[in-house]
Picture 1 (spheres, one colour):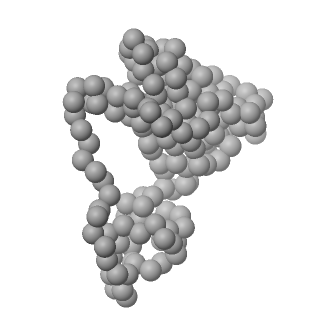
Picture 2 (cartoon, rainbow, N blue to C red; picture 1 turned 90 degrees about the vertical axis):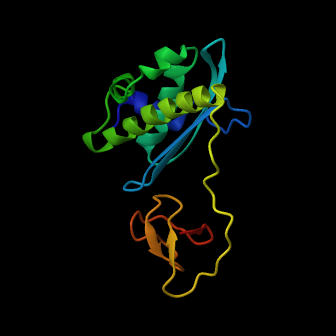
Length: 173
Protein backbone atom coordinates (compact mmCIF):
# COMPACT_ATOMS: atom_id res chain seq x y z
CA UNK A 1 0.00 0.00 0.00
CA UNK A 2 2.76 2.49 0.94
CA UNK A 3 6.10 2.84 -0.85
CA UNK A 4 9.37 2.04 0.94
CA UNK A 5 10.13 5.78 1.00
CA UNK A 6 6.83 6.55 2.77
CA UNK A 7 7.46 3.80 5.32
CA UNK A 8 11.02 5.04 5.93
CA UNK A 9 9.85 8.61 6.58
CA UNK A 10 7.03 7.30 8.79
CA UNK A 11 9.24 4.98 10.86
CA UNK A 12 12.24 7.37 10.94
CA UNK A 13 10.80 10.88 10.57
CA UNK A 14 13.30 13.67 10.04
CA UNK A 15 13.15 17.11 11.68
CA UNK A 16 10.49 16.33 14.29
CA UNK A 17 9.93 18.81 17.10
CA UNK A 18 8.71 22.20 18.11
CA UNK A 19 10.89 25.21 17.33
CA UNK A 20 10.54 27.74 20.15
CA UNK A 21 12.22 30.61 18.28
CA UNK A 22 10.69 30.02 14.83
CA UNK A 23 10.70 32.87 12.33
CA UNK A 24 7.53 31.50 10.71
CA UNK A 25 4.86 28.99 11.69
CA UNK A 26 2.29 27.32 9.46
CA UNK A 27 -0.50 25.26 10.94
CA UNK A 28 -3.14 23.33 9.02
CA UNK A 29 -5.65 20.65 9.80
CA UNK A 30 -8.20 18.49 8.11
CA UNK A 31 -11.16 17.92 10.42
CA UNK A 32 -12.49 15.13 8.22
CA UNK A 33 -9.48 12.85 8.70
CA UNK A 34 -8.14 14.40 11.92
CA UNK A 35 -4.65 15.23 10.60
CA UNK A 36 -3.03 18.32 12.14
CA UNK A 37 0.35 19.68 10.95
CA UNK A 38 2.51 22.49 12.21
CA UNK A 39 5.63 23.54 10.29
CA UNK A 40 8.26 25.77 11.93
CA UNK A 41 10.94 27.58 9.90
CA UNK A 42 14.08 29.50 10.76
CA UNK A 43 15.21 31.82 7.95
CA UNK A 44 18.75 33.07 7.33
CA UNK A 45 19.81 35.09 4.27
CA UNK A 46 16.41 34.46 2.61
CA UNK A 47 16.87 30.67 2.93
CA UNK A 48 15.19 28.11 5.15
CA UNK A 49 18.08 27.47 7.50
CA UNK A 50 16.18 25.13 9.84
CA UNK A 51 12.78 23.48 9.69
CA UNK A 52 10.82 21.29 12.10
CA UNK A 53 7.36 19.78 12.27
CA UNK A 54 4.80 18.44 14.67
CA UNK A 55 2.12 16.28 13.12
CA UNK A 56 -0.81 14.44 14.60
CA UNK A 57 -2.10 12.06 11.99
CA UNK A 58 -1.74 8.91 9.96
CA UNK A 59 1.42 7.36 8.53
CA UNK A 60 1.03 9.32 5.29
CA UNK A 61 0.70 12.65 7.13
CA UNK A 62 3.86 11.98 9.15
CA UNK A 63 5.78 10.84 6.06
CA UNK A 64 4.61 13.94 4.14
CA UNK A 65 5.76 16.22 6.96
CA UNK A 66 9.15 14.52 7.15
CA UNK A 67 9.73 14.56 3.37
CA UNK A 68 8.52 18.15 3.10
CA UNK A 69 11.05 19.33 5.68
CA UNK A 70 13.84 17.53 3.82
CA UNK A 71 12.76 19.12 0.54
CA UNK A 72 12.50 22.66 1.98
CA UNK A 73 15.70 22.78 4.06
CA UNK A 74 18.27 25.05 2.40
CA UNK A 75 15.84 26.36 -0.22
CA UNK A 76 15.24 30.07 -0.77
CA UNK A 77 11.80 31.28 0.23
CA UNK A 78 10.88 31.60 -3.46
CA UNK A 79 11.96 27.98 -4.06
CA UNK A 80 10.04 26.79 -0.99
CA UNK A 81 6.88 28.44 -2.32
CA UNK A 82 7.19 26.27 -5.44
CA UNK A 83 7.03 23.02 -3.48
CA UNK A 84 3.64 21.52 -4.28
CA UNK A 85 1.51 18.69 -3.03
CA UNK A 86 2.35 16.86 -6.25
CA UNK A 87 6.12 17.27 -5.78
CA UNK A 88 5.89 15.97 -2.20
CA UNK A 89 3.84 12.94 -3.29
CA UNK A 90 6.30 12.27 -6.12
CA UNK A 91 9.29 12.48 -3.74
CA UNK A 92 7.55 9.86 -1.58
CA UNK A 93 7.16 7.69 -4.70
CA UNK A 94 3.41 8.08 -4.56
CA UNK A 95 0.65 7.94 -2.00
CA UNK A 96 -2.57 5.94 -2.09
CA UNK A 97 -5.38 7.93 -3.69
CA UNK A 98 -7.24 8.22 -0.38
CA UNK A 99 -4.12 9.73 1.26
CA UNK A 100 -3.24 12.39 -1.34
CA UNK A 101 -4.94 15.05 0.80
CA UNK A 102 -2.04 14.63 3.29
CA UNK A 103 0.40 16.04 0.73
CA UNK A 104 -1.93 19.04 0.35
CA UNK A 105 -1.67 19.67 4.07
CA UNK A 106 2.13 19.57 3.98
CA UNK A 107 2.54 22.03 1.12
CA UNK A 108 -0.13 24.29 2.62
CA UNK A 109 1.58 24.31 6.03
CA UNK A 110 4.94 25.19 4.46
CA UNK A 111 3.42 28.02 2.43
CA UNK A 112 1.68 29.36 5.53
CA UNK A 113 4.97 29.27 7.48
CA UNK A 114 6.69 31.28 4.72
CA UNK A 115 3.78 33.75 4.65
CA UNK A 116 3.92 34.06 8.44
CA UNK A 117 7.65 34.84 8.22
CA UNK A 118 7.08 37.42 5.48
CA UNK A 119 4.22 39.02 7.42
CA UNK A 120 6.33 39.25 10.58
CA UNK A 121 9.23 40.74 8.61
CA UNK A 122 6.84 43.33 7.12
CA UNK A 123 5.61 44.24 10.61
CA UNK A 124 2.18 42.67 10.25
CA UNK A 125 1.14 41.37 13.65
CA UNK A 126 -1.50 38.69 14.03
CA UNK A 127 -4.29 39.43 16.43
CA UNK A 128 -4.69 36.80 19.13
CA UNK A 129 -7.20 34.10 18.20
CA UNK A 130 -7.99 32.86 21.69
CA UNK A 131 -10.88 34.34 23.59
CA UNK A 132 -10.21 35.58 27.09
CA UNK A 133 -13.87 35.32 28.08
CA UNK A 134 -14.74 32.78 30.75
CA UNK A 135 -18.07 31.05 30.56
CA UNK A 136 -20.05 28.25 32.04
CA UNK A 137 -20.96 25.29 29.88
CA UNK A 138 -24.68 25.13 30.50
CA UNK A 139 -27.27 23.09 28.72
CA UNK A 140 -28.14 24.68 25.38
CA UNK A 141 -24.95 26.81 25.21
CA UNK A 142 -23.01 26.93 21.95
CA UNK A 143 -19.22 26.69 21.76
CA UNK A 144 -16.59 26.32 19.03
CA UNK A 145 -14.65 23.13 18.39
CA UNK A 146 -10.92 23.89 18.89
CA UNK A 147 -10.04 21.64 15.90
CA UNK A 148 -12.54 22.45 13.15
CA UNK A 149 -14.02 25.70 14.54
CA UNK A 150 -17.57 24.43 14.00
CA UNK A 151 -20.39 25.53 16.29
CA UNK A 152 -21.37 22.73 18.64
CA UNK A 153 -23.28 22.10 21.83
CA UNK A 154 -21.34 22.79 25.04
CA UNK A 155 -20.53 19.91 27.33
CA UNK A 156 -20.01 17.25 24.65
CA UNK A 157 -16.81 15.23 24.94
CA UNK A 158 -16.46 14.81 21.16
CA UNK A 159 -17.17 17.22 18.30
CA UNK A 160 -20.05 15.95 16.18
CA UNK A 161 -18.50 17.61 13.10
CA UNK A 162 -14.90 16.32 13.14
CA UNK A 163 -15.02 13.60 15.80
CA UNK A 164 -12.13 15.01 17.85
CA UNK A 165 -12.15 14.75 21.64
CA UNK A 166 -12.77 18.23 23.02
CA UNK A 167 -13.25 17.74 26.73
CA UNK A 168 -11.22 20.41 28.53
CA UNK A 169 -10.43 22.32 25.31
CA UNK A 170 -13.50 24.52 25.14
CA UNK A 171 -13.54 27.95 23.47
CA UNK A 172 -16.22 30.61 23.67
CA UNK A 173 -18.54 31.26 20.75
